[in-house]
Image (tube, rainbow, N blue to C red):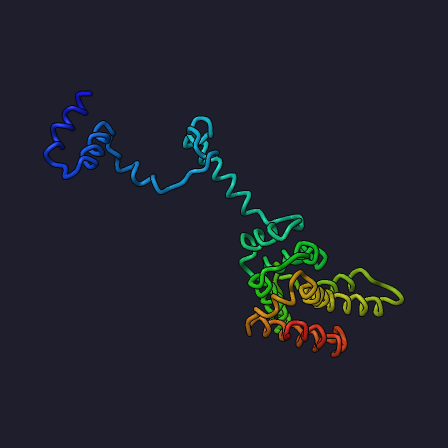
Length: 246
């Protein structure tokens, strides 16, 4: 009451109208808003976030926070050992673990064409599609130049040596040649399976319109290399290439 009386005496001669005087007196007993409160006025907080630190567990010791951060970091750094079940999981793993070509190929081998078709049955992001094509082209360029990734593993050479050491007696040369041919085509056929799986993903007919020139160049690189190896006849490879050039 004292506060209101003082406000009346203060504003009776300062206000031009009665309404202004009434508003000034009515707000006389209100507390000033602090700077911190002003900064948080525009920030909306969901109901489930409006709990105390004690109930939400936000008030943790420094040691507990370090242990939690260390555990989360270790978990995120571990390379996946099982294929993804959803497109979201695929994109998360690709973003976290597949920054280098070797890791990208390793992850694609873990998935295989069946998983790619399954997780992207509804839709595949156009940007991710371009990255997958770039990975295929990168590996094709390496093999074309005679290189090998994934721990320096040369698939054909490893199989030939294994066959030469294991086989003996009659028919060894023929079996060795067959093993060498299978090893030579093993990775090219894998790249071809991924290249053919992508056009079967959801909304590909729409996403193909967003492919950049470099993405189409990646397709051309893979198809050209597969043609040089004689993996399939030229007509079948051209049909695969044409799917990306609509």
